Amino acid sequence: MAALTINMPTPARRRTHHRRALRRLAVQVFAIVLLIVTLAPLLWMVQMSFHPSTDVLSLTLVHPTLENYAALWTGRFPASFGNSLVASSVSTALALLTGVPAAYSLSRWRFRARRKVALWILATRMAPPIAFTIPFFLAYRYLHLFDTVTGLIIIYLTFNVPLVVWTMRAFFDGVPHALEEAAWTDGCDIWQAFWRITLPLSVPGLAATTILCFILSWNDFFFALILTRTKAMTAPVAIVNFMQYEGWEWGKIAAAGTLVMLPVVAFTFLVRAYLIQGLMAGGVKE
Amino acid sequence: MAFNFSLSLTRHLRAAPRSAAKSRAATGWDRHRQRLFALGLAPALVVLAATTLAPAVYLVVTSLTPLTPVNPATAFDFSSPWQNYFSALTDARFLHSLWVQVQLSLVTVTMQLAVGLGLALLLDLPSRLIGALRTGFLLPMVLPPIVVAIVWKVLLTPDVSPLHHSLAAIGMPVHSLITNGGTALWAIAFADTWEWFPFTMLMLLAALQMVPREPIEAATIDGAGSLQMFWYVRLPYIRQALVVTAMFRLIDSIKAFPLIYILTDGGPARATEVTNYFAFIQTFNFSYWGYGSAIATLMVAGVLLLSLAINRLGTDGGVDH
Image 1 (cartoon, rainbow over the protein chains, first blue to last red):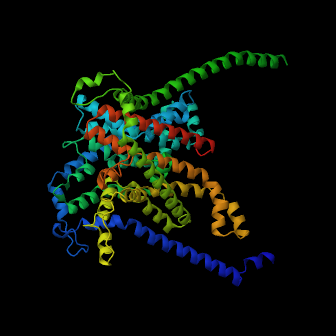
Image 2: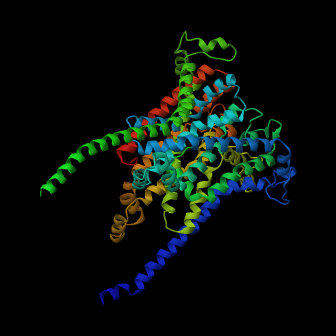
Image 3: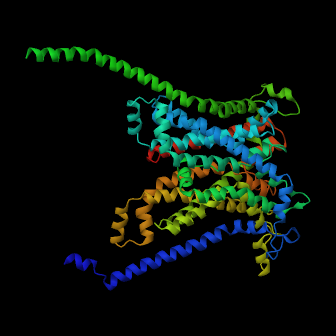
């Protein structure tokens, strides 16, 4: 009887329920408006890329055109895009290859210098890029790595390896030990158990880490600006070439900017859950 | 009985050597395990040593020389090792860059915390739509920094800016903010806040979702308003996360580069020349490699001190483990 009265929708109860639903709706509408306002500057750049070069400065898009993209295609921009792609993927692959086993060792092996290694990795993540750029710049001139994609791949390891070790260690910490220990007693050695049991369980973490490494390398501007000139120039740096003293080629700048951000935006929406996990685990960097 | 005894005896006799063998096997297995773990760790440590430790040593060594490309012999000139550091202390341009850095860092970290916290509180709702919106809000942070710089260059260049055009159209024309010494740093700070509020939002959302339900429900029953709810119930739970997030942003704010490079080039009249940019100009525009290395070394030292502070804050409050 008492339970019945509690569950009965009284007018007052219905009113608070209504109020809560209304409030929820208001929050959602407000959030949508806020998101549109926040991303408006970005959308503006994208629409600018479809302006014909003759009226880039006009505010309304009357005759949308692909001429800016066509102009990019025939220039040197595709080559720089290729450089970005190669440098980012190879550096990511190398970082995973060395970093993943290290992360597992750090997660499972209690050795004396463990904390020191962790601190070292954290410090590397914190250090300002200029501190790496100066010695790399000086060394590359002697090692003939200046203005090469190989040189970029190596310097991208300075942030990719710590990122892989740091985030994957957090993911491995979350995988229960019991299964591996069972595999050990069944005669697997550590790396067999890792390969067959722990790694398959960490695929989401691995995906998140891979994407983060790729995005960070792809987004790099500072290292490529200093360590490349023409041959190994990456896409973000190539955009700067459209900013000449005679005048900025706004249409091409906007089109190139749109192309450079496209893979990153696609990744963000395709794998957002993994990405957020990765961002959180690593405490992230730019 | 005798049979029994002998059985238990033999069992006992057999057990002793077997357990010894087992423990020997166990330590052997342990040693084997440790070797395998070390094998997994070694490649990464070698790569890290080559790409981070060696450059760090090289940086510090270079900072003790007056190295410039004009005179290669200066690479080994350690006659007055502290010269670059003394120069820095009396270099008005360097000291000014520190002051600009302090202003930029304080303003951006404060604004990012405020915006990020506001959004986190707004978006702390279990709803699919809100989940999708959160991803949208993340975008500025994952965009290539060069794209962020272009976006803001467009908005802040009067010729092409829709903002400047609209303001002019309604009779309130505004002069360029990035060529004005009084507003340029604010413009950079605003753009930087746009780029990095998603980070603070993300960290604080995670912290908010860790707040237990009970105190919130109790406070609701007691009739707490939303402001009281925030101040007395949620804030105490996320205070630690706020501090750690602020420290992370503080450290990263020292690295701001593409925005300054594209928007103002450190100008006008060095109004936006932060320490990082100063080091960049000294090293790569003026080729004072020794001096630039000294500035970079000082920056690393500063960052390491801040990192130690984070580590302490993180472990004290139980955020890190």
